[in-house]
Image (tube, rainbow, N blue to C red; front, top):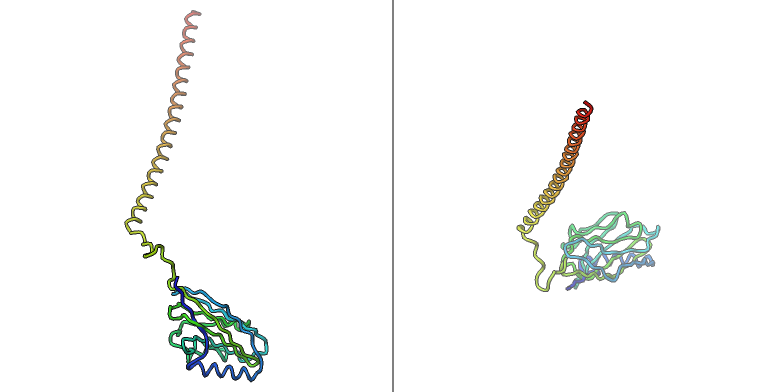
Length: 225
């Protein structure tokens, strides 16, 4: 299956901001450890999370997070500082498609949610972390499959069943239900007929017994007289 990749690094309008982050960070002479996976698979058309974690400590005031994407030059994907998103210089390709998990930032989680992944999002991304007491940056390679689902055959996917097939299936189920119901009623009627025959037979036997007993009594009376 074909695949695409996304890169991260500073350039263009984002370069000035990233450079400022690095200058401030270098002045602090502290390094924040930033971790991202080597690769991530994302499906075109679906949301994807680009993971980024860092060694947060309570001395990191004025936390700033910047995600960038490198396509020959660096573009800003998402930036956050002063406790809010700063999207003035966001690359148009990512407008209304990115967000951070604000409640996770103080836990050292600066992962980026990228919505409705596109083929052109492929490339290399970079996650920058900066604070009063340190800075850090890390690189991430993201791969995107060319299609959201694999085709069923070598040339074309399996077509959906026609509407007529679904209609025939429904009628088949109705016919099966009617047959089962008729069999049940037939067995019930047969059982009732058997019970009726047994009751009739018992009644005939009782009547026959009474006739025999009556005849015997008549013969006995005649003999006595």
